[in-house]
Image 1: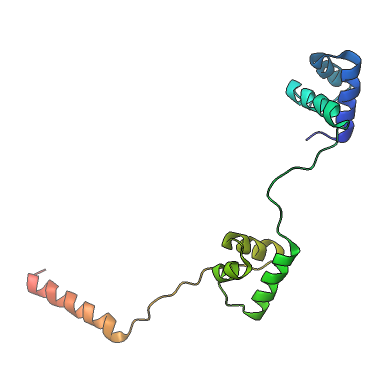
Image 2: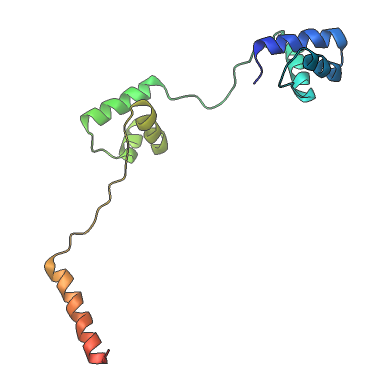
Length: 141
């Protein structure tokens, strides 16, 4: 990304020479290390002609999470810390990945998935062992 000073310098040189190649040569003579390409120079000049400025324009795109959503999630977690991210996402009406990202990035928490395992009794462990011993002795192994 070019600095504002570099963009202004490009505009001054392009107004003087009217040639993109000559602009690149002049910028190299002035000691600029990373000389922009011709399409970049064209873009800067066309932005000047369209907008009247070489400043960055606001970009369109997906909006960031609002503070209201972050506060709702924070309140839900503080009142019910064992609530899953999917339940929170249904309550707040955002994607569960967004909830995970808010927990990690904004609230500095670490969401995780709880793994449930079936508790085995002594009987359930001994019975298959006994059956395998019986089959191995009857087959002659």
